[in-house]
Picture (cartoon, helix red, strand yellow):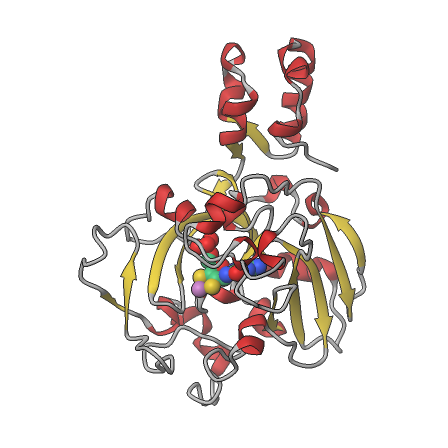
Length: 322
Ligand SMILES: Nc1nc2c(c(=O)[nH]1)N[C@H]1C(S)=C(S)[C@@H](COP(=O)(O)O)O[C@H]1N2
Ligand SMILES: [Mo]
């Protein structure tokens, strides 16, 4: 099924009440009901585009006793090199990006391969909200209420075979729609952006395929329409705008490792004891904590998720496997 964005819908369609009601049902079936949809008189495409609400259940288990990073920070301080290397660039340069319709192609060692509509990969009625920390390798962090589904559930439905030992993820490669993929705006990364996890990491209950945050569809700058959230790893593992999932036998290449192998490894687990070659990873600045000069907080091993994930790395030298 294809979900139209509010911006695709002509105002003539919106003013017709019958069409409006039908469309509202359509959006509801898709898990999207806009704030303004509750007040027909106030319906406008502009308002609706600003707030496409999602329907989801709040996770009881995955909450944090920490204040949420304000929406403003979450959506204006981003890393998304496809839209520029500056933190403010993605919010500015991704406004025209249309994340629907969207398909995901599944390849490699799995029983269910092929190209699927996003809504077949992530069933809109199964959405869950979980509050996770995200910590960038650049030593800033955020606490965000994500809306999505566990990656493990999606992978199980795709039925990887015994040959699958890693999962690779690929971002959209479309220089016409992603200005950072043309010329110098994207900092000279190799495109498309790629990431990967060991299959057992991917099957851990924590990683989310997120389609929203703060109860609304993902803003473009945060990786619309679907991005990964792997909360115990540095932010760059949480790949945005995913179009391909590939089940492979050997460790797949990853973008930041290709770009600077001595600085960014395949694992990239948050680890206060292993410094980045050019700076310490022992402390972090929490966005929204006040000024840039607010005291930093200590970074936690595995970003605080050790209880859930430390067993994945038993016996491994995490200094070598950075
Ligand atoms: N495709 C793609 N995914 C990406 C990036 C990117 O440049 N391109 N940046 C990564 C980095 S370095 C971080 S810290 C997070 C930032 O996510 P946020 O902007 O939603 O906070 O996205 C990650 N995912
Ligand atoms: Mo990052």
